[in-house]
Amino acid sequence: MENTESAKNEEKLGCFYNGKQWIKALPLRALNNVAEFGNKVKKLGKDDPRRVTHSIKVGLALSLVSLLYYFRLLYGGFGVSTMWAVLTVVVVFEFSVGATLGKGLNRGIATLLAGVLGVGAHHLAALAGDKGEPVLLCLFVFLLAAASSFSRFFPTIKARYDYGVLIFILTFSLVAVSGYRVENLIGLAHQRLSTIIVGSCTCILISIFVCPVWAGKDLRNLISLNIEKLGDFLQGFEEEYFEKDENEENVLLCQSKKPLCGYKSVLNSMTAEESLANFAKWELPHGRFRFRHPWNQYLKIGAITRQCACQMEALNGCINSEIQASSQEFKKKIQEACTKMTFESRKALMELSSSIKTMTHPKFVIAHLKTSRIAAEDLKMALKEAKLEKVELLQIIPTTTVISLLIEILAYIERISESVHELSRSAKFRGVADSTAIVPVSDSEDNVPHVVLIVHEITLP
Image (tube, rainbow, N blue to C red; front, top):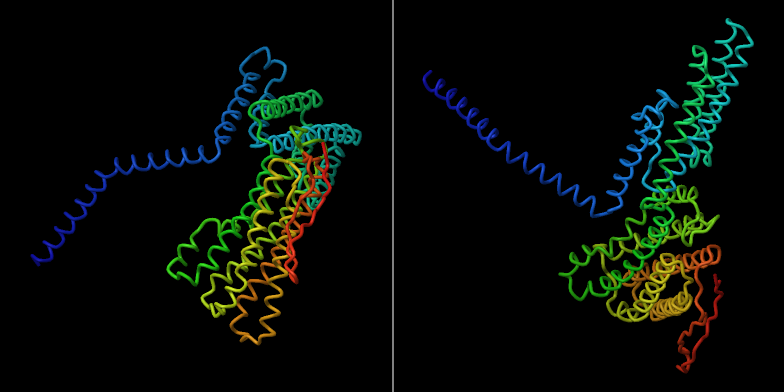
């Protein structure tokens, strides 16, 4: 009995001691949480300083619109509807100029159209008398809401006008329903439309003239960065594939290299690209982005880039496979051609990336791709010779798979090059005066050196 009581007392003392220690550690834990939160905020601002600027711009817009409510002179013209301007700023102001313009115009036009139709529906329903008016108003709300909701399923409307359709349904319903109990319906609609226009214009002007963030530039930089990541992968691939068997201890170190894994972010970039392209279509001409800029061409380049990244995913799986039964003699035989092919392909990708980022016509891409294609033919010849020499099939299958994937990747790089050249012509990239590329080529039969001059079309601004 005494042992039981002593055990209970010890348990109580233990709980009391643990609670006391927890209370003592509470201030330190709170300080650590505050410090951790501060570090996260600091990192978030360092990653993209435009986020801090955007937050300040939103605060500025809200402060300016709030003046309508604070000053009696301005408040008298709008009344309680002034709050609609504040709500408009909250829901319209977005990170980029294109997103803000798209939302602002959608909200303004939808409000105007819905307001006019709502007032018209109210007057038309009033002709039916006191008993027929609510019935007709319910019918109008049902028909327009149903038709508008169905229109949101169209891809083009969903992409660019979905927010406008939503505001149209909301505004028409509010005007049609509230108009049944309001005498001065036109005056109320005028006040709300005016305050919404004021809020939208405030957002648009601040977004354009105060540290603007252009979605078009972000799209261009994203496409350029994705192509650059493909080039980094080819560099990392060549270093890992031919060094892997020389030093097995470096396998894990090679697999952890960022350039060899950078392509993975390219695979998931479709949503971001489509969103930026949609916002960019709303933007005004600025810099070298002229009116009717070919934004869809960027999406085409992005799609081919992702297809190329898929091939790199398969290639990365091959070189990281645990089963490596390749003939080392055969790998050394193809190493020179394979290195040359990946080196020239990487240079082509880097120039294409730079071309998009600087909006200049690519000059030497065709030359690099020509050299890569010659190296690819050498790899094909090596495979044919291996078959004629009756090399054991199981020993060359892994290497043959790698070669096939490299040739597929080269084909996608050529498609990317064609698309970038098309973009260069459509967007009128800055041309280069010297349009001649000189490619050294050696004759496989007599090793007589000669050169090939490649002249490609260039569009001058």
